[in-house]
Length: 468
Image (tube, rainbow, N blue to C red):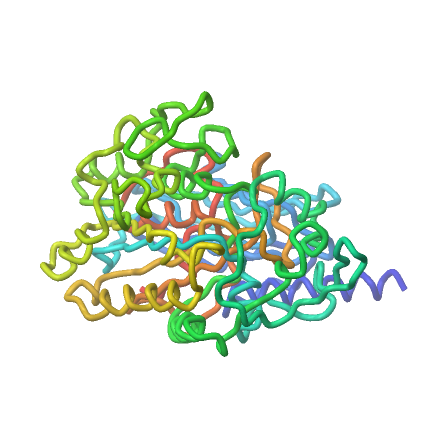
């Protein structure tokens, strides 16, 4: 009986790893590490993409990459897909795994980085659009091919405060009220990974989901069907804004999960928790590299008229607040028309367009988002552009996947991520573990920028969602 159980577990893990790694055939020996890319003996340009998976009869908890004996990358999980910047010359690359029994196993290859060469991306522009407060299951739980809503998943049946059993249901209300969200609220519905206290604390509404029968959501599903969607993208921390925004641009939130106002203006109301941030962010990196960038906020600086300073991460930093890189959204459209789009554009809509519950119609917001995408597609920038669409937190909506641990703050529940680009994999669902720092890593990879800190290195790149 024990042998049969071990064999079943091993087969399940093999299949799951193959599913996540696409066409890479894993070594069936248990335990083992398979390095799918690069090939041993290859001569490559830097940065390189490293893809690896594991086969083990026990759950794999940790994967590490060592280059010439020094640890270069680490992730919690059984597979990895990341990029590394290496110096020219010969290198020994080892991927090492550890499982729940403490067993350590590894695989090693040898590669050469060609002198004076660097890998180049065809992308001249990256546009990041951050919407608000939607979990993955809430928007895409019924989307074909995803790890979505099904009987038996975590929290599928939950009891509310009256003892009624609530299961997921199609939500037709396109103007739902706001749900409880924040670190305390997230921890209690998380329930130590059971994901089963949403109905009790947030009510029946939190178990509702949308699908493509809902006006506006049909356009988001259409984009996901045509381009790439990630179903394993997590909030970087179990917290509310500005944590997501800060991790996306700096891989750090000043060690606080509090929902606080920026220290600097405009339109802010700082309190004793607000501090001037002086650690580096990707805006500093881009400027130093001579790459243009901007944060485009709808109604920027119009206090009380839709501008939310808490959502603007660059307003927290001494080096970037209220600078020429912070602009009203109208400037994005002007640059798009004029053919002067920055290398990196961050777009933040006002509440009525952000899809934030309690701030307007989901249909209106989704149609606005689809309209922005269409404007970019109709521009001269489109052939060399990647649009990344995500949401800044799950907002109290149920998601069944328990967030894997990465540090004391996170991860938080899953949110959607879409990649829309001529170079996006078509009709593809990525199962690679990702988070907001993955967006930062992709920007850094695309424009040849270094890592900011150790947390920056702990997240996978978005390369699995592209075909270059």
